[in-house]
Amino acid sequence: MSGSVSLNKNRLIVRNLKLTQFRNYEYAAIDFHPKVNALTGLNGMGKTNVLDALYYLCLGKSYFTSGDRNVIMQHKDFFRLDGEVECNNYPEHIVIKVVAGSRKEIISSGVKAESISDHIGKYPVVIIAPDDIQHLLEGSEPRRNFLNNTIIQSNKSYLEDILLYNALLKRRNAMLKEFQIRNTFDTLLLESITAPMLAPAQRIYDRRKEESEKLSVLFEKTYNEIAQSYERCTFRYESQLAIHDIGYLMDRYAERDRILGRTTQGIHKDDLVFMMNEEPVKNYASQGQLKSFVLSLKMAQYAMIEKNTSTKPVLLLDDIFDKLDTNRVQQLLRLLVDKDFGQIFITDTNRQRITDVLNDVNTDYKVFQVEFGKIE
Image (cartoon, rainbow, N blue to C red):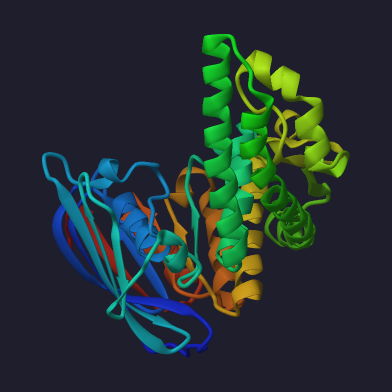
């Protein structure tokens, strides 16, 4: 189904996308609907790969894997993404090319990005995937990544601080490991790497503290709308820097770092603590509550990015029927449609099911059938 839609100018819309040797697609060209797009087909056919391509187009990296080599089609040595987008009514052409062993190329409207930081934040995007529940509830690193992903899409200086801090942290850990192997320790040499970490670490902490407080307010409101229940769900930001200055921590724990061969203090240890009625959410919540909790987090992330960028991000919903029942999905989509979210992409194994839900919520949409890396 396709129809006319009233489009608010403050949004990102992907008009079309071409994939060349990206994951299981040797070549595919797709023209999208500006409102809702549903990709249907059996598992393993390539539905999620289209969402990952859209995410990659917007942020210059895959959501599902850390290495670019992993998204190049098997037995090939490069991939290319080509997309026409509208960002706040301004048309742009994005091309991303990755050749194995070479530096990534990102070109927007004919201008080549000097680094990925030049690209991140220009095209806001939020994705919700089936494994998000497990990842966000079981590991501190995915929770930090979630917070980072929320902030970097509207704050370039924060991204630069993260890149700088992580590069220095990697060097510091390598040096500590070398000291451990050789049974030596050079305080001045270690300090030469530690000192430049202090300023970006403090700026990262300050920004995370400020943004997490705002995000928490949005999250609580969103959870009440989605779950429509009486439990109180919250989260708080925890950091070693909330108690001690980063310079003090580095000095105090230098001996421990030497013994362990790694940096034990810093913003790379930060975390988000998820709570439900003052109890840890993963120990207390039912499966339905956990699903609603993580869904609300992602919806709060969407609202936060929209607020900070004044642009409605593209929303990617991967196989949400796997984690939510039909009634809850219908409730979610009605919420998205009624609140005039931006462009939405949904994957589902059951074409009839998603078509019925989209008809029920009375929205314009387009459905694509995906089979073995081919799209109809």
